[in-house]
Amino acid sequence: MERERLLSESLVSIRHLLSHLQGEVAALETSWSQVLLVLSKLEEACSVDELSGLLRRNAFFEQWEVLSLGDIHGRGGETGLILIDLDHFKRVNDTYGHVAGDEVIRRVGEVLSRFQEQGRCIAGRLGGEEFALVLKGRPEEILGTAELIRRMISRLEFRTPDGGQTWNCTASMGIALRESGQGSLGVVQSADEALYRAKARGRDQVCAA
Image (cartoon, rainbow, N blue to C red; front, side):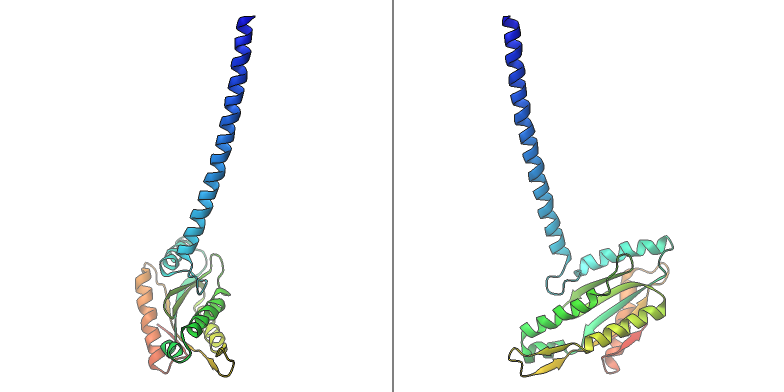
């Protein structure tokens, strides 16, 4: 009888211990899930520009390489880069203030975000007033997209805080197609050269490499 009593007490102790351990495991799982959530939010914060809502420079180039994997497997047609630079942006800040400049960046970001499409188009803010899109398609589709974006930006209307003055913002753009075996830096250089030609020809226009 004494042996059975000791065995019974041992079983009860084991059950209590297992119950306690189960609670500890559940708490650890909850904590781990919270840690993963925080890490996910931090990663997103590091990848996305808070003002424009678009990818930051490093995240943009990383996503570009992911998109390029589809080219390796023969999917999605040609890949083109559109570099976008807002014309006379410093003048906006100097004339209307940095709050107005931030509003321009935010609304241009909204325009570009409309063109983002999983596996086909990504948009990013490279810094300051410079943006970029990488998209797949035929050359004429890429050129048409750039022209459409240029018109959409030029039609944005901005107002001073008192509503007494309005102005518009324009953008110059350079396009380059990624040739077989070409690195992203080479494409950027070609698109950048086309962008400077657009500026030299009077701005508010698109030039292709």
